[in-house]
Length: 218
Image 1 (cartoon, rainbow, N blue to C red):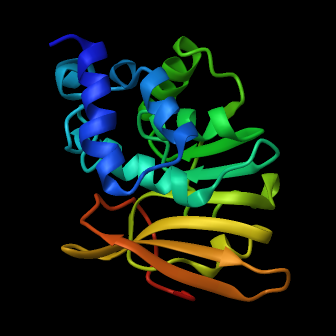
Image 2: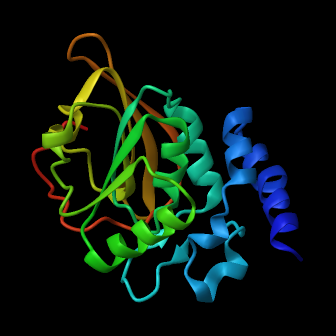
Image 3: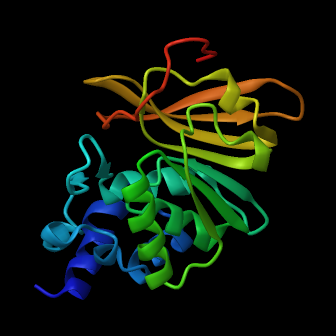
């Protein structure tokens, strides 16, 4: 099967049936070459409904495409939005966000992964992502506040420091809990300081490094 056929099948057989109906999101998955962000040994599985290990980096993986698509849809990223991603991984989620936002700051704790993600993004012609090597457990306040924050991995709960970096009207997506009882959750800040939270779906996700257990809001 060719990559193009596999890409088409991924969109229409995995992503769309999973309540992803936004045409702009579907078009992104049809146009952005996911296989070029996957580690070479796993490129044949780039369109499968599985998490792909990122080489020798223990616990790091690309999320299944239907999960990436659903999160992207629920965040409703706008062209003027400033986005923070915690956990760059391969750079594919950052690439998706960048195609919809003004720009993306993506923080990756593993220097080798950060370098690989920069190379992947450059190869894809994406210039509005700044991959920062560092610990994003408290966000990246020096570049904030943000309209959108994405935590691209599992965390026990959401630190208050991350929510504090949202602008009024901002949205934060995170995979919250401890396996196997984990939930994808969407947090929205109103015009003041009130945070509303909703559960999108349940699944298990690889944990991000260094996230503390306290203090938490959710």
